[in-house]
Length: 564
Image 1 (cartoon, one colour):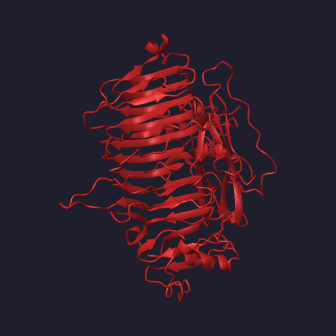
Image 2: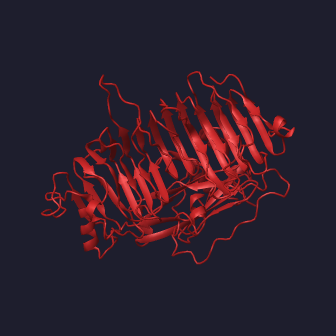
Image 3: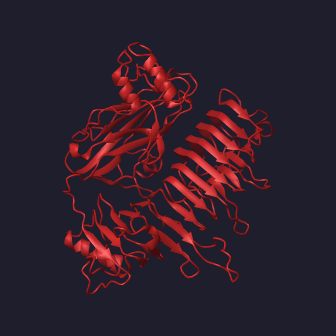
């Protein structure tokens, strides 16, 4: 029998209250706090609760695929045919040389029972409740790993996410051929893959360092701090020469000033990467305010990581972004800042007509701890965004699929007749028929006087189904008179809307004009602790029966007034 978070009391209790109840259950067989299922509440359960259990075993590699577990519960139970919603929060191929954590964010309309982790085929380790991970400020299920416990190199991590009732999700699978149309494209986009990471605690994986300065010289420099190159492209060309054509693990230190983005005239041969990032970051002791990337550029490689840098735009440089030069590519952007800085003749800041996203064209984009100010581009190109801040965005702030956690948006600027939504799902006629496994968690917006979300189906040959999705902990206000409201207009199996506050806009449920069967088909929908300006159901006019009725849709503590 699987025992864990499913049996804990009210999940809204504080940790202190839960801890007191666990201690009061000591030496009993209370299933609520017998977290490891051994029949007795004891020190092992306390360690699990406190997250202080021993580090995870690291194996020697998986020998076979992890089988899909049976559904929990019984056929016919509500939520039995709904699959757990779960995504990794780590960036694939990241390199670790000290203790680190591996995390999964997970939801289900019936709650999550536990998440099991296996690191490189080692013993499975169960985590029974989410906690705030101090390393990324995310409430998640996570384990601790010590890279000194094994040799350096690439490892694979898998996870199994068990709902109390319903279908478990196995996070496993390759990260090769993830380009559009590739064998693993849709699995990757929907988050159904293993997590591959690099361990380098012993320093056996090379990290060649090159310095680049706006005042450097590509002809006479040697890439040292005292004799830097002028261009990033030249620095990567030198790494390629020193590592026999491979740039895995290269670190490009940018000295103070403005740097031309991309490899420029050094584009061929490309700086090849296989399983480790090229990292571009400020030289030691410099801040991101002191180091700026300018212009559009690409690096023609699979893995690019950018840290602590300003992506700068003005009336001269109207777009600064990194574009993919490799269709299977992944970019990691961490602690970066993007801005469009331009003023009119009166000294007033111009609206964000220009200013780009951090990247475009990558198969995978991860934006972690990033900020954008007064830019037309936003976080829309990211598969995963965590701890984002967008002030004066000029377009839709967040992507319409993937994992988006801890976002703050304020002072939306409308450009012409365009309108933005915090999340707007739309796809063309050639898009996959079904998208699934999406999480939008802890989203706060102020002065955002457009729609919180608009979820549309595509043309009749495009995406018709948007399944296994969690909208959790949203607090959105328009803060001005506006007729905009949120719309759900796409078929869905398994949707959790929990702790949602839209004080000045309604949520409307309606079939989309291009819907293939001319009806909104939704089931396994749980609307819980929601306060909105209105909950509008178009089912009566569209099919003579409401959409928001049991057993397909359950509502708990839903109010349409007093949301201040």
